[in-house]
Amino acid sequence: MRVDLFDFDLPPERIALRPASPRDSARMMLVAGDRPFEDLRVHDLPGLLRAGDCLVFNDTRVIPAQLEGMRGEARIGATLHKRQGLREWQAFLRNAKRVRAGDRIDFGAGVTAIAGGRDEDGGVTLDFEGDEPVEVLLERAGRMPLPPYIASKRPTDARDRADYQTMFAREDGAVAAPTAALHFTPELMASLKGAGIENETLTLHVGAGTFLPVKADDTTEHRMHAEWGRIDADTADRLNAVRARGGRLIAVGTTSLRLLESATGEDGRIAPFADETRIFITPGYRFRAVDGLMTNFHLPRSTLFMLVSALMGRERMQEVYAHAIADEYRFYSYGDSSLLLPDVG
Image (tube, rainbow, N blue to C red):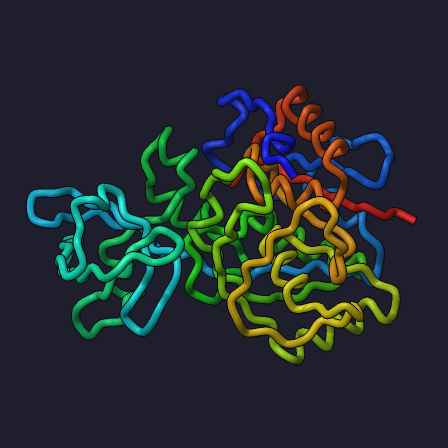
């Protein structure tokens, strides 16, 4: 499909620079089948799902993966995006033309790395020196990797250490938050439990590639970035049991959805999974695992807008986004939410 079919105009003032407070007070648009849109709040969620449904969260934890350093007199910025080994990470570099394989980059606070070769995603391998775990080095020298559409408008600050982390964050490795889950609070989770709504977690380490633009003119020419995910056997069994007894699996965020679909066979059964996925979901895709999606509002011409268009229909999602813009919903990572239910029968 032509990529320009997934374009739309977004006024820059619609981009949220801070999250709602409290988190579950954010707005949420209910898009259920072909019914009229409903403008609600995230804390209304327990009344919108059925007892026996299951929300599926991503428990990845964002690491302070942005570094600023020097290679000689050249200033170099690095955003880590995928672990390669115990001390090696792939990174997207700013001012990358000033870096050659074998160069040492000094990121301050005693953190240095040796640049390696370029990878197929356009990044550079960084081999961190020393004996301390890389995560310890990042806590000392790194900062939270806010999306470029926020970082270009204000500096990262201490609030982002908490704001850009979900309440489910357990497994270190993400360089972007699974932002749909930023809206959840302990109070909301208690309300969901009281309504008989279950929850499960899986792990997909979100990479910086999620913010890369689709540069191709046609979706068939786009190469999707790789991300590592895991669903253990017990979780897979519980998720299959939900569907077997008639409950719905509602992915909280496109990361949870992409991993669920990657782990599910043609027979609709979710299998244990521990691997990279490059799944690219566009209109025409047949969903095998999920029955709905809670997600924020995405970038134009992005793989994520293509994904929601595959779930609900491209024309329908263009209508959804036009309504969101006109009604002043807040967009992107710190913005408002939507609950997308393709079948409300």
